[in-house]
Structure formats: structure tokens, C-alpha cells
Length: 114
View 1 (cartoon, rainbow, N blue to C red):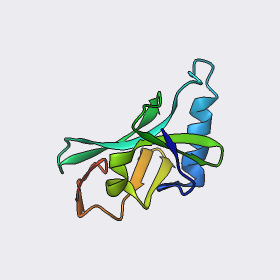
View 2 (view 1 turned 90 degrees about the vertical axis):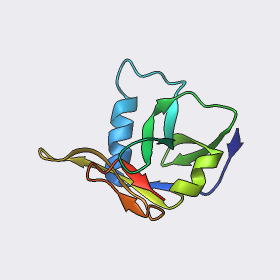
View 3 (view 1 turned 180 degrees about the vertical axis):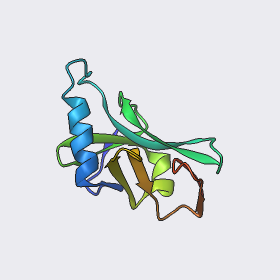
């Protein structure tokens, strides 16, 4: 693992608050970190990964307002400069991704192409 000083992604205040809320749940495994990444699939070719996971050797580690995050080094090319937000409304609830590297996105907002 490599620790980086510049965060490749941004989390809005709403996203940070929701992540910290989840981390404060009684059953949360504090050995896990917030994983931000991509995987193949989805209607546009790639899908965002956002969840808690154990760090791996191929990860870069960075911290955003005391939230320790991990990202596979090879994913940074797809995600550098991306902003993750949390929408808590009744009609639209969940994490959203604003990625300047995406050439197109799908209607669900979790799939993109580069």
C-alpha cells in the first residue's frame, strides 16, 4: 500500500456525513476502509465501486476529513477529480458521482464510459 497526500477524489460534506454515520453503526467493522473504485460492467461500460472493504497491497491510501479511503492504483486514471455526493431526499436517495473523466454516463448515474 502507498499513502498519497493529494486525494484523487472529493467527498462533499453530505457524503462525508453519511459515510461517518455508517461507520458509527454498532456492527461496523473498523478494520475496513472506504473503497472508491471502478469495475467493468454496467450499461455504459464501467461501474463505480463505493463501499467498505479491507485494504489490499495494490491500494493507495488517502484521507478525507478523517475518513480513511483506499483505491486501487490503476483506478485513479478513471476517477481523478471525481466528486462523490450524498442525496438524502425522498425521490433521490443515495450516493452520486460527478466524474470529469467520463465521456458518457447512463441514466442510473452509476455507470460511465471513458
